[in-house]
Image 1 (cartoon, rainbow, N blue to C red):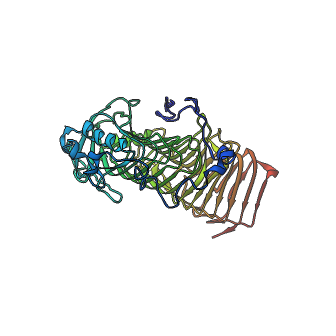
Image 2: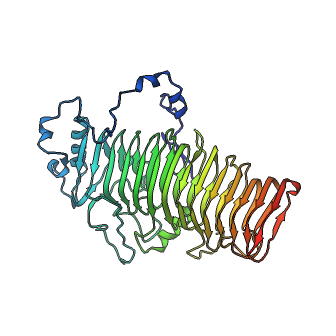
Image 3: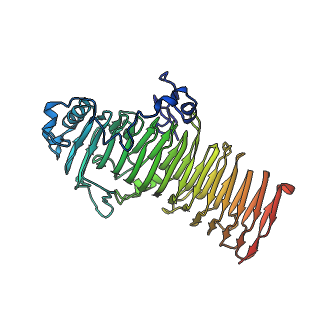
Length: 473
């Protein structure tokens, strides 16, 4: 996989080098250590959100804008929404007007709005379509060429940037801006052969950005959030083809919630094979105190990939996450010393396309580069993968109260090659070798577990291992 950085950004245009613009990077530590903290009291009215208060206090509104009531309608600025006319300039004009008035809501009524170039959301501006919940269109059962998907709701037809992965994003969001209730579709994306690159669909380029109720039906790369502290990304659907969501340089509690990526754009084996070879649902670089709840993907090479970038790696809380039909459900290249807490996860890795050759599905892969702790609590693993887990590196990996259902004949459910391992309160539902402990394992505790058909543990780590109080079912 290629690696580049923003200003060039990390995997496939992902992570920027920190501090390259000369600004002091904000994080929780230097914030709370600042003498200016005492001066913050009373500066923000309680209960007032950035969106609700946008432009409402301390300014004089543009007289021309007041006639539009609670928001601006893009049709008033010349947008047609007919699926044919390029509406980029008209939509941007409405956004700029709201920005000039120090904030406001720009409405995108039901229609198909062709956007050939890029849109910029100014600070405190909301671009709002009609959807008030998750939206999922599908062409899965449609044969032949169709350029009218998704065909309902507030839809942006993105036609620019084909073949230009590093081009300007379709939508760039400034601080305190929001994007909501819209489907985004690339009508010229290739579905008969391997798909073609496009720029990022949504780029969170400021703090406190909100993206919700958005469908990324066939984006190449979906949402990028870099230095987008306190972001809220929720109710996202669709099937991005290369990268779903990428986070980096997040120094203060970001939230990603209720995301469902599934390859229902087309019934296209070339597309499915491409995504299984190269697709990554969630890629997390440096993100402090990241929260991710109720997320899922199907059919990707990697469900959740944790990487190291110029500023570091990730720590956070991952609850109710899942990945199905993946080569690797979880890939940890690096985690912060504070650890990854993965709870109530459901993971299935298998070669669902029955591709020949080098494919070797493994549910959890911890790479030799990892130094941080990873914990799986009350998680379930199934599907005909080679291993449930293949563990390397110097970090500690723990499985607590987990259900391990299936792994390959002749292989171990957990193949620990180095680092430390804790397995407690787990159930191994398949007869066979449950755990292999390699000679480079620093220490392991395997206790209080239940296995079907008797215990088989290979121990090459010697006295550094404690095994006991295990039972059979």
